[in-house]
Length: 502
Image (cartoon, rainbow, N blue to C red):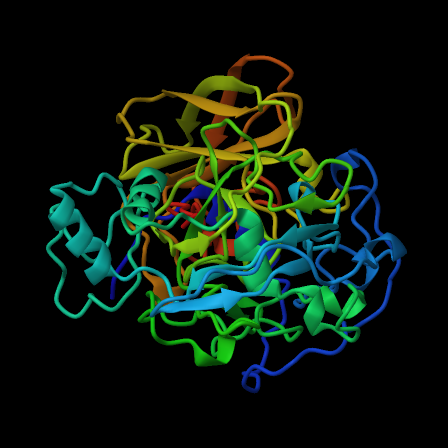
């Protein structure tokens, strides 16, 4: 059993996952011809910040329903764009043409909206994630040392653990993934390229020459809910999270979860780095985009696909995460196109600092790791104070506890929004995945007294007091589960480490 350190994300997101229904294993991948379900009544605005996402009460379904995301303006010709170059061994072609990007479902974060048309030239994308063996060999050839703090299955010098060579490289930094692909004459895929490979283009719907509602496929395999035979992730059984494998699976596995063009593990296994810089407003007003590259500047990069320790709501093709919240389950694959992507015209993202102190009801802030996490208040449900399904943290910092009565923190977040800030302490007693006890929060969990925190500029003087697990009402959106027993964090920049990438 390979254990990981968890993050505050696991505690908050756990409550969302507990509302999911378990799903039965599904049939092999087959063409999708319709989108399930219909519009439902919308709930009150999350966090009181603007209208709620369309599609029904928050958390009403374990399956993403995109029927309410369709509008007539999305009906455009399916074809267009330059053809893909010839694809080589280990690559699969994604043909040129339009696809529908984003989500406006109840599972979608605000940065996934609005749904819009993206036209892409054809490209080749690795069928599977880059393996540990291949990444380690590249490090040795380049005379490099891996720099990620959450590297797994190998040493920084490129020595592979026995039996781990065919698993995906995990704990990789964006700079390393970018350099690896460049050294092979390729690039990281753009966010749009990754999402199209996972969702499929408009040529696959009910109308092969035009985008239609059937082209809003939520998952690589179609419309059925995530299950362990489709995606290696953390699902729910009896209302509580359960890891499918408690580990990554070999890169050549995952036949039942193949995407519409034959790619493996576009959902689950490891979060995947793409080339784009993350920006919450990159989709703008929803105007069509062509071969987009994302913002031309920025320090955070988008993560897609979810990881082996990520909840079902993160298996969606539209789900966006970023490496400001870095974690262990982060890998990548490479792409090749004959066309250079075009930067999106979006203003640079301004960042501000939130600073304060964390104390513990137990006395000293001591243990393996202290996590301070921020979620956008727009991603909470005003009726319950809990996170809405599928939402990811905006920022997280992992600190080494100093053993004192009070520990200072600094957390950088995008300016102009309000946040729910919380802290979780890993005291070293957690990490037993078989019993669904996460490392994060094992030593306490608590919210900032000032929540929600408005961050138009730098904010100082925040105070967080962590309660022992099960010692009181929640901390963070929804609070910890009864008894303080948590499931492991979702992988995403993570989430736990929140790598989720995690």
